[in-house]
Amino acid sequence: MKPYRFLAGCLAILGGLNRAYAAPSPKDLLTAGHVDEAIQTLQQQISRAPSDAEAHNLLCRAYFQLEEWDHGISACERAVSLEPGRSFYHLWLGRIYGEKADRVIFFSAAGMAKRVRNEFERAVQLDPNSWEARTDLAEFYLEAPGIVGGGKDKARAQADALTTLKPAMAYYIVARIAEKNRDNATAEREYRAAIDASQGGAHAWLNLALFFRHTSRWDEMEQAIHTMESRPMDRPESLIDGASILFRTGRNFPYAIQLLKRYLSCPVEAEPAFKAHYLLGQLLEKQADRPAAADEYRAALALAHGYARAEEALQRVER
Image 1: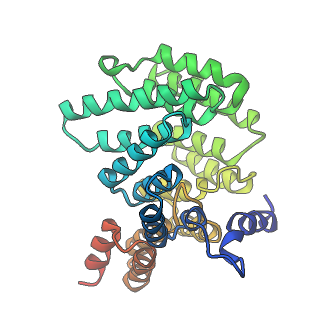
Image 2: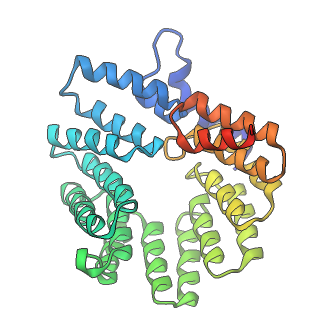
């Protein structure tokens, strides 16, 4: 994608923040990564209109960004209770239940996993055409044990349903199933089919890079990330995900920094700006540039003062 096209898209997404006569909406603030302001605005909005389901859902998503799962669960549950017929609200409740399940002991996690499944299944039931809900449900079926309702056959059924809704995601799920079966040849073929189905989109290239990481094909992983950056940016957070892969595998930190700086010109809700600043700080810290790393951690905290990871990192580099 040409840089000017990418920036034009940023201006369209963030245009609400530049309106001369209107304050930015909570959704605009979330999109731009201003999570502190978003939470403050939403809490004020809810105090005036306690039955505003959309405000509760947005508050849940703000807490999701901060990794404050308990606060987020309360907000998401409230949104669902106010409008139980909204598929999107069930989807977000399932997502935050899933994050909580990953961080509790086994027996609690089993009960939470059933809640995740119930919410994702309900989201699909309410909106069978939601490719996001079907994809998240398929991911659950792939990762969860059978005792809580997981199963590769169930994931395959979701892939079949996605064939007409979002072909690239259908290939992605089939590729994931092949990986689970240790059939790497089929997995790679399906990941490449997803690239073709998405017309070479960045997200599909990122998934291929992750496959190469899982199979320890490091040079091909890095090349896939380079290719991803030059492709249509159908999922801008692929830039921060690519930088994260390079950081975690200890490869090409300067290029990872370049990806993050490009991402910060147009962050999105899925990977808010404060997390990009935090990752940039980590990369700079690895390169022994502690003052620059501290600046990035401070930038993260300026957007999300309660982000514990940035607080701990800043204390570490300032010792």
